[in-house]
Each structure stands twice: as structure tokens, then as C-alpha cells.
Image 1 (cartoon, helix red, strand yellow):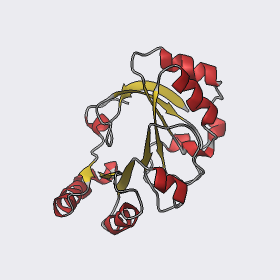
Image 2 (cartoon, one colour):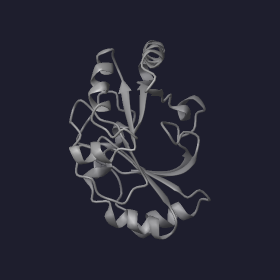
Image 3 (cartoon, one colour):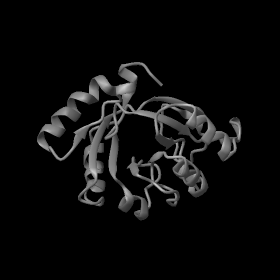
Length: 193
């Protein structure tokens, strides 16, 4: 769908310069998705791996984040191999609802209620990032916190359009459950893509 160089605004790598590769296509369809234009892959051009790698190399940072849509709808082995071969550290942001492919340095699992993540994605998670849309989501987040590895970082992220209402609840929850950390979508506060 798009590629751009910016700062990672969420989770463990927040604040780092990164080249984002947003793949089009999504079969999860979250009602609160902030990139619904990514859902229909037919609305976006198909690029070769060489074109993607050349675009990434045009920037000084060597962290690439593959996101979507839902990036695991595609087999990402060839793309990640090509990026690794030219020196990129690779992160993926996924709902985990499709089979895991690719060679990753960091897996950000952001499970969605609309389509459950696969066990292989849960086990591979370096970071669990749960979007909090309502108070029921805290209990739902805990079910996944119990399934990821003990080394997995745990983040709660207030849904952006309800941030004024939800953020105080998330803060209180984290204070009461300090294994969690806040992911506050820094990129939206500082107004970068």
C-alpha cells in the first residue's frame, strides 16, 4: 500500500527511525482500524522485491517494519531475506491470524477479537500489543498475556479515537498490573506518518 521513512510510534521500538512497508490486504477488518484503505489489495500497486529494497536503501536507517493491513497474508520469506542481505533489522506488526513466514528480529503481535491469532504467532511474539477499545478488553488482553513467552514485552494501547476516555483507564490498569506498559502512539502526538 505504501512505504515511508519515519519514527516508530508504538511499543518497544518507539522513537526509533524506521522504514515502514505497509502491505495491502486484510481479512481481519477491525472497526477502529486507522488504515482501512489498506484492506483491499486490488486498490494498490504490486511492487517487486527489488523495488521495495531499493526504496528502503534510500534512507539511512536500517530498521524496517513490515505492517499492514495484515502482512502475514503473504509469504514474506523472500522479502525478508532480501532486506536482511542488505543489512536491515526486521520487525513485523501482525494480528497473527495467518501462518508466520519471514525471518524476524522482532515480532509485534497485536491480536484482534475478529480473527484469533495462530499458536505459532503467539509463541513467536517478542511484544504483545493489545488495543484497548473498551473495558472488556483488559480481561481479553490478559488471556493472551498468559499465552506468550515470559520474555515477551506487554503493552496496552488506548484506541486513538477514544483516547480521552480510555487512556485514564489504561493508566489505572497498568498501575494495578505493572507487568503491562503503555503504548501511546507517539507518532500521532508528534504528527508524523
